[in-house]
Image (cartoon, rainbow, N blue to C red; front, side):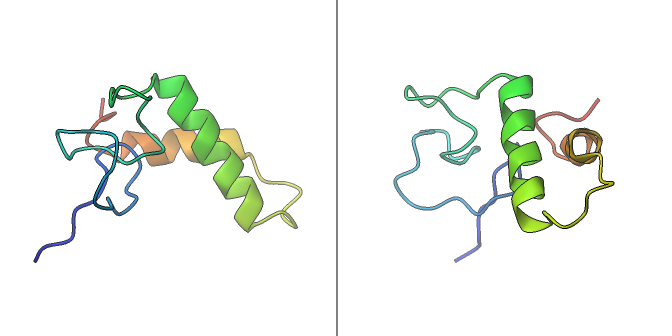
Amino acid sequence: MQNKYCLSCGMPIQGGAADTSGKYCQYCTDDNGNLKLREEVKAGITQWLQSITPEDTNADYEKRAEYYLKSMPAWAE
């Protein structure tokens, strides 16, 4: 069985995720299974980045999140 990953953030998709298309994880979809707005997803990734490297006081987490989103199929420009 092939692993499935969120096309918005790269998170592994677990069975029972809100998105019925199977493209997006529970963190990137709203209660109806629709992809959240880019800014909402970016805010979540920014928070996650801060949580894994809180000692990095010089980091621009928002900028890192933006670069990360550009690499994801849902947000590629």
